Length: 177
Image (cartoon, rainbow, N blue to C red; front, side):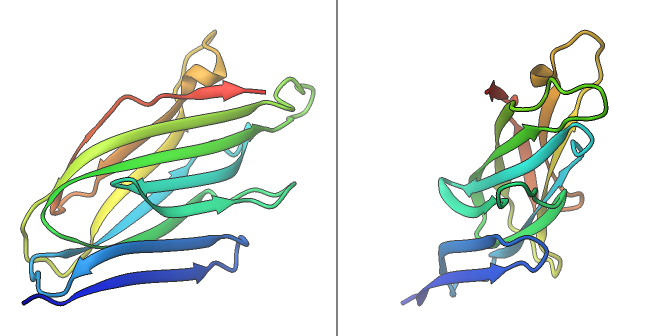
């Protein structure tokens, strides 16, 4: 008979007044479960302010961060996804940015950019002391004459070596005022 517990982690980060919450039901009798981390790195600070982040693992929200009005989230952060049993998972990343005025160019003021991407991945059975890590990279693809909203990209990758193998779906940026 297996013992089941509900893991709830609430941590307040000092750098940004935001809450990271992990709620996953886990079975303690599964010796093949691995610890999992998600690391997000955004490289859009020059032109955009990072104001909202949501990460969902199999539809369960594991991160929901919102910057206070007039402030922005840090460019990089790490979140725990708890223990993951071998099998398939889907990570969904939804991010929001606001335009940043730079010098003479004020056309970005008032614009909001919403990006969303998902990746399906499989956790393989492996005995490993190091956690399985999934990286989320956000950047602007190069290209003259291409509108900014079509340049914004979310890339989701599994760390190597890792008990995770990932296949990323195409990003679906959405923009609006």
